Amino acid sequence: MHIRPLPPGPSGPRARAATGAGTRLHWWALALPALAFGLLLLLLAGSGEAHAATGEVSGLVQVAEHLLRAVA
View 1 (tube, rainbow, N blue to C red):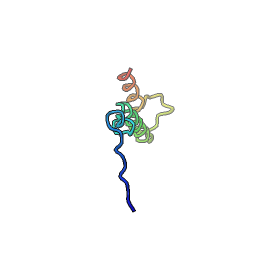
View 2 (view 1 turned 180 degrees about the vertical axis):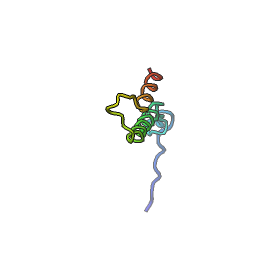
View 3 (view 1 turned 90 degrees about the vertical axis):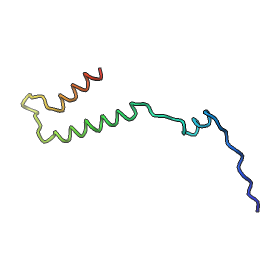
View 4 (view 1 turned 45 degrees about the vertical axis):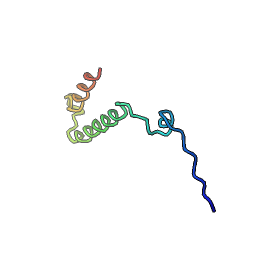
């Protein structure tokens, strides 16, 4: 039984992009999940000291406001 070798595949930048070897992530593809994780972690960590009826602004709200000002 003889096994024939496979013919060589395409090469070059197009072939690499088609196979996924040349793909790159955008900066926000890593930054947004990390930001969401951090905000959820802050939300869970600060839930023990809830200030719902006092009218005080919690630390989480202050951090979120600072982040929104920095992004906008």
